[in-house]
Length: 464
Image 1 (cartoon, helix red, strand yellow):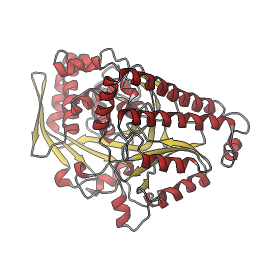
Image 2: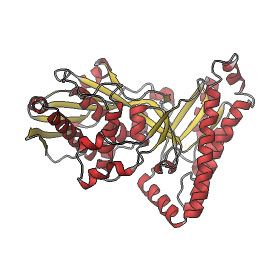
Image 3: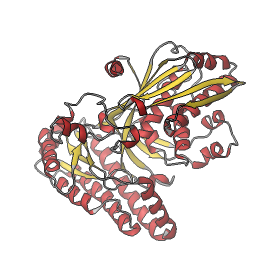
Image 4: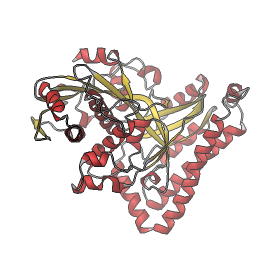
């Protein structure tokens, strides 16, 4: 964990961004420490700005949404080393409020232990003005494209204003499954800790990760796998979850946040990246999935049919690892002569190294379909199967799947990063009639949390 430093940014603006995520392999299995998940960070990011505000008030605004329902204000102070955070007004957002409570409580405990309790009091007395923005891909842009008379194409998305204003409150806006709540929580935790001088990047990543996991789980009321928060912090990697027991004291009240955050976190985040020359393509499908319901049903099946589930999860785990190894194998060839030419040639013919990747992706998909049949949960619904099969036949496309818990609302494809491959996919998506398919502009990104310069949000903040 990073050592504390005296706050030096409290008179300035602090901006931090966190990426979205796509779980390519490891859906459901990632809930169990026996297994791993292959999580890829996206180029689309969530941004959090913290600056001095109105005296005694912590104000949080979701900058893309109507102000009358997307501003949350709190009276905040520290008394006898303890945080007192009181919501002002009727509007509530559990992720914002829980993250504020958790992060400021941690800060109060840490500064009290270090004999610097007055520093947080001084910051809160001046107030905090917090604004969050998300790249457009985090929310469905169908309505905005239709209003502008634009087709559902990546080129159309590029014509929309960055941080496009959205017409309805956050809770009534359709998401695209990139992990907006995890990216929100993580960027808010990081921005606050950096603003208070309690962390720096990248050395403070572990502290931020532990606190963001605690805040996210507290907001959800349960301990999830945590892969989405881990991706928001560390970027693309192979993830093995932390032991749920790490956060049990938070729910039972048997340990302080300070002790929990500095405790024995045992997650694994093994470095990984997609090979150069490949492109992750994402699409928002016009149908919704109740992920918690899916997870509950799959876990119920696993409990009731434990032997069948163990057999299937063992096969699925092998398929997930085969995909990881196939992608690592290709990445190791990047500096070999003719690498780029080989990828280009693969658009029109089968190439051995890419054949391994194609087979591994199909192995992951088959395992998910088998789990669908066994559990009765539409992890890869037939409608998605038909769309993915059609896309996987296209020149330059290595395969694809349904991310995370699956369902009807999104797909991912892995293709050779060449205009002919990408255009072929877009033609299929644009002409697909069984479901409405809207591309996302995001691609893969290796990076996790990063501090941003003020210019990145200057135009958006000036809109107000």
